[in-house]
Image 1: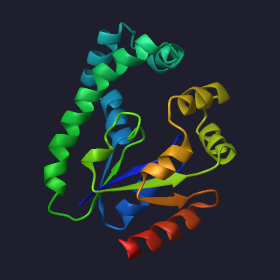
Image 2: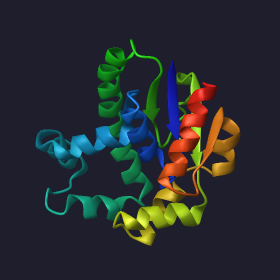
Image 3: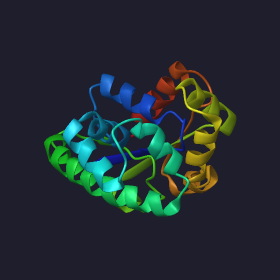
Image 4: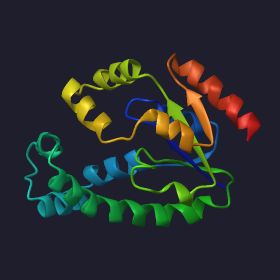
Length: 184
């Protein structure tokens, strides 16, 4: 069984995946895979060359260009095939374990929901999400930009099989995950 975990920026998807991994579930994180791409000099160089961005301050340069939809499409066209290829390599290794959890931030935005057996939506109010994201050291403008690229939480709520509210502590999120696991 393939279970997607989705939610808007700062909702707690990564925390959920970390906890599920500690519980010995197999998890595949889109954010982690993309982070690994940028940490690999060869892959990062390939991506940045195709985007015409230098290695120096590449993160700032990408963030500066993200509001440009043309740049955004080009970035996705470069990153997504690599992301899907990596997932295709990992998934068969995990398929002997049931269930397998996939962290997919843009699940509905990229029309990927039909490839999963169940969808868990982690919902959190905008102020709490913003507070969490700002603690990561990014700006309010970044939060606003990334949040604006995601569909409304009410729509995600309707489209998902299960919703976990995450407006409290990490402990509360973990307790809600355990409750949900007992239902599944």
